[in-house]
Image (tube, rainbow, N blue to C red; front, side, top):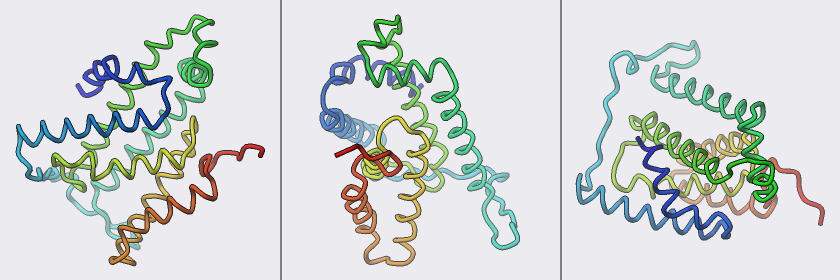
Length: 219
């Protein structure tokens, strides 16, 4: 449902910004977040909605060195499957080749017969659907509330900023690094946990401004 709804949003708003700078797309996203937060608060109230786990995922599994909840293992397994599927789609399929071509050179892609407008709508819907799936999978750890978009949007934008463009492996690596730093900061330096992730952003934007795993351009 989220993927289908996102097509209407993309056609109504984002289609006019594909040739605009990335900052304008980010600002539009933040504006739509404000609207969504206001609407959710109006209809459902400002309360947090906990998501109880089914009994078969609430159990713990002894891994020898550590006991871990089965739910968390399931999240890791599903995430790995999604990563593998996305990598295969982008790197090994005709659809993935068309997406890369349309992003690199839209005019040339259109001249070869690729329906770029429809392709962008499909990719936007896929991204929105995966975002909804991520929210559903993580709901027991990150409870749902109207302010949910703003609480985690900054982490998403940091991953995007540090990954560069068009590299699934880079996105995975940066997301893992950001997650480790953010979690370790809360455990090891509670008083500085809110600053650790921004320190990482500052260092990497200076050191690798084109993306953490992206080959640096010639000066």
